Amino acid sequence: MAGVIAPRRVLVAVIAVVVAFNALVLALPEALIPPRTALTDWANLAAAALAAGCASWRATRSADRYRWSWGALAAGCAAWTAGQVAWIYLNATGTYSSPSAADPAFRIRPPRGFPWV
Image 1 (cartoon, one colour):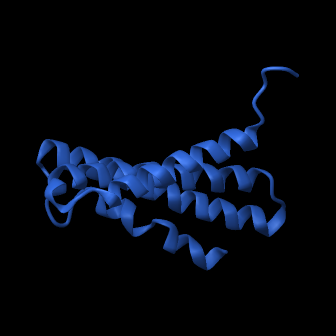
Image 2 (spheres, helix red, strand yellow):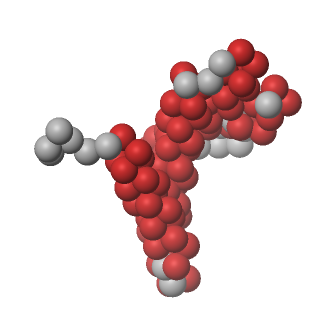
Image 3 (tube, helix red, strand yellow):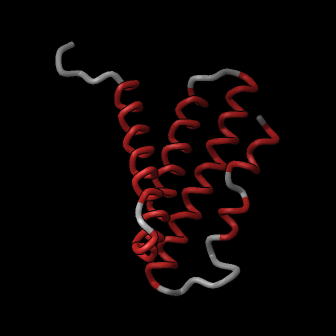
C-alpha cells in the first residue's frame, strides 16, 4: 500500500523526537534555568506519556502473566503522566506546595509497578 506509514516507523520517529527534545533541554546553558525548568517539566511529560503508550501497546500484544506485567507498568507510567500534568498545572498557576496534589500520582509511578514484573 503506497502512502501508508508502518506503525513501527511512527513509533521510532516519536521515540527519536522525545529523546532529542530531552537531550536539547539538558544541553541548555545554566543561564536559562527558569525556562529550562519549564522545558524539563514538558520533557518529563513527553517521556511519561511515551512510556505509558509503549507499555500499553506491549500489554495488548502479550499473553498471560506478561500481559499483567506490562499492564502494571503501563498503569504506573500513566500515573506518572497524570502526576506530571498536575505538576505542570500547579507550577503554571503558582499554587504548588509540599506536599502537592501531584504527589499521590507520583507515588505510584513505574517503580511501584516493578514488583509485578
